[in-house]
Length: 311
Image (tube, rainbow, N blue to C red):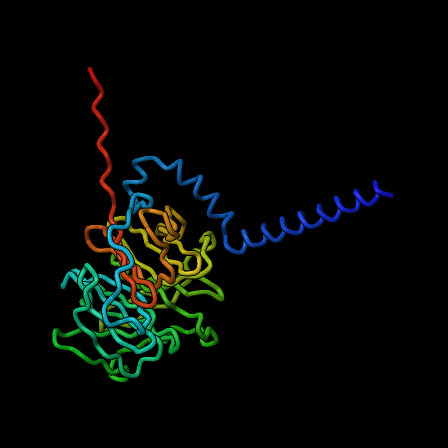
């Protein structure tokens, strides 16, 4: 009898272990940890020439992290863009709709009330001096030019374009980036389903093109919270809040490199909790904002020169 009891106990433990294994595999698949691990191994095989032709995120390190944006504690910042003309950054707030201008080290310079906006989630500087704001709840892309003394914008007075997906609810477009090479806007749909889209976007008097889906089947992300475009490489940055990842993709939407935004990675003393905005400046520095009001800067570490071969 004792032998049968022992066998029964071992069988029960085996069932428990199998159950835990199945749950673990399901969690790995849901969070894309398996895809992430597979791509990490691929990333280790990339040569120096390919790295130099890309943004190459593993080469970046946090040099400013978790800096509070003063006065924005309850405003929930989202989206981020760089203006080469003013050498400043812009972000938006969703709880109390505002457009915020920042210095490159995260000092608040100006607040602009966004009257009539519902839930601004993304902001982008276009190449003709216009700014564009994505309102996720209204499902609109709104464009305007900003004056030096502007302190208030009226939604009803601005040019807006319907992005569709009427049933998206709070899972609509959050990411926006300007592809200056192809004169188009890149858009990131948060989830349900997650996806990348392109929208040909001409000057103020031209007709907007048709929203077209881009390849995004290999993105190992749970959501998309922000986008940025690098004209030097033609690649884009895709930020994921839920996955705590920053991913570089090529013009075909295929992954090129990535970094985790978890604690201890790439110089981060603490993980970036709810990353909601990313952009790059002309020098390739990366800026990130996270809710409710934290600011980060990542800079590429210089590549060590290889010693010359001795004669």
